Image (cartoon, one colour):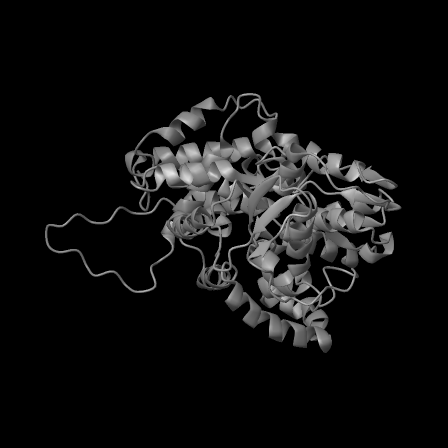
Length: 467
């Protein structure tokens, strides 16, 4: 067995991963669905290629450095999961691989040497990333799940935008070469007036903890405010609460809610994700709601996995499963509830973007379109790229900026080809990525959330309020 690898039993004690690997028949149906395979045509950058790498890791026979590179290139978009005729749970495999990579990182302080006769800790199956990569990732995970910390970064960002320093640095060749992650962050950062030439945003303010239903009460729901959504897109949360109230829902918005754990879970940091999940589960349990409505695709996807995440924790397994069963995407919830409030016309042609963690992970595609088509005067234009990932993918556009930029260019071209005047997305990362890509391509369009379009229609606002 090569040095630096764990044994199969250590990596897969229950044999679950080996069973999933065995489900793959290497048919190739996943290849057209995979964005990185589309970009490079490399077998090891396809789902079945990565499954082969994971099988080699489980067997202890592989080139660790090469395997880490190809696994890191995966967006985690999950487009291959619904495309697979054998039902291979690739999501479980890539999540495990990311956990191996996270575990490979050296701890912040040296571990004490084992006592004489004590077992030597098991070696990690993948090599650690570079010091710079580790530092950048730690900065992301120490900031993005904490809205208060994220707001501290917003001040310098706004100052850089006012002086146009962000554009100078973000498009500078030297910065792209020396610090591509920082250049990518500046490129996709939200503008002060919205993601890209969008409407003026309302003051941030603070949402009340309770928004009463308009008319007869039909449900009592909790609303997730999120982290990035709360800081950079507060208008989306305001619109979500208004739409739910207009449809007869009492909306409970717990003031103390924290991160749902999505960023950590999708980054392979399961213990960290579990901590966030336990806290938020308790928060919504105390709220006593019928459903937990989520307006961010990545958050909803992770929250629906709470039952699996905490399945082995005594005292939490049943609570996590019960909370996960209440989680519902905004579009999913509204279609199931049925309309009550009248829609007013919006003379718009909109292009709807399928966020990966909504379309592929949650299998929600028809509901947002049904809600948009129900608005009088609105024309829905389909983006002709088969729902390919835009390149955002959690932190992917920050840690894999070149691949993300190429995918962003493709998405921008596909969106522009629709002739739409507005883009609708249901995930904050997608909104930032698509807006940035459209602006870079010279075809800037406003990118808004489904909740904002519904809110404008329900309130009788003019179409121009979204442009």
